[in-house]
Length: 344
Image 1 (cartoon, helix red, strand yellow):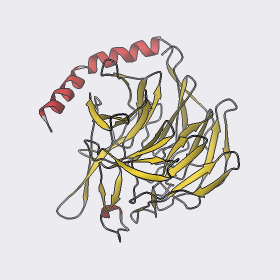
Image 2 (cartoon, helix red, strand yellow; image 1 turned 180 degrees about the vertical axis):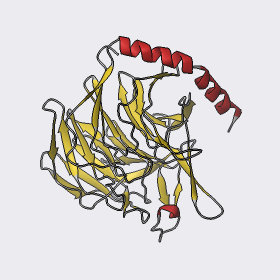
Image 3 (spheres, rainbow, N blue to C red; image 1 turned 135 degrees about the vertical axis):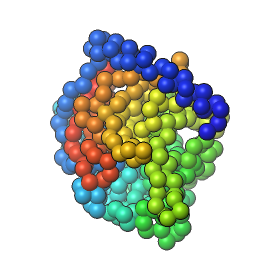
Image 4 (spheres, one colour; image 1 turned 120 degrees about the vertical axis):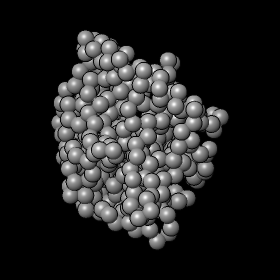
């Protein structure tokens, strides 16, 4: 760890008492959790997207984690109702969604039940008017567990895991990457962008003021015996597509992998996650980051601790749904909790 990162982490830890004061202020100001209609399927490893006021979520890992899905549905907050839509062309888990223009792109993801996961290069494109998926332009390389978001009319993919070799068909035969890609629908091709400072998987991201904020996640460090040591990272890195450059900001006060993120009024909100070492745990912790002050504050915690969950903002509410209630992939849920942010 570089000296700059150590100083940032120390500052974040020093700010914890202030974060707890912010938590008390949030509660006093009316910020609170409530519940909403559960999705029709319990699943985890979700990367949802919002288009025209509706939340879309595709694929996912089932319980037990040898099962995975092509299920695709949307949620209408105005009616508090989930609607099943056309299934993915193939079942995927860790497939990331991004809405560009009037289409939703389903990017990468794994096929196979644990431990026989295989990262895919497929891209699918969903037309909400026709309720139909079509094949999109494939990625230059297989990718899963990365973060994906649209900025303007372009789709960005950063990090995640890719195959160690072409024949890789096992979870352990994948490696973390810092590579990034952008898809331009007008040109119909994927292009490389500047690599992120940190190679990681299971991070979360949101777009604020035309920049991509990537936070948390973990690194799968291969051990001499071939096993993986899953180590969480706290770093927050911001990509500016105008300059094709990354900047490093204050890290999370607590490293959380498999978390979810959403943006609201120029701030980054993050929720949940899990930890494998030094002890296994699932987080209820939630945080908000203010880019103007480069500071983190604590939020009211998730009522139900989860990892591999999805988060999406519609209006003044952040919807947090699905996810695993225990470490690993065998405890998928259909919990749907909503953080009410009126006045935040």
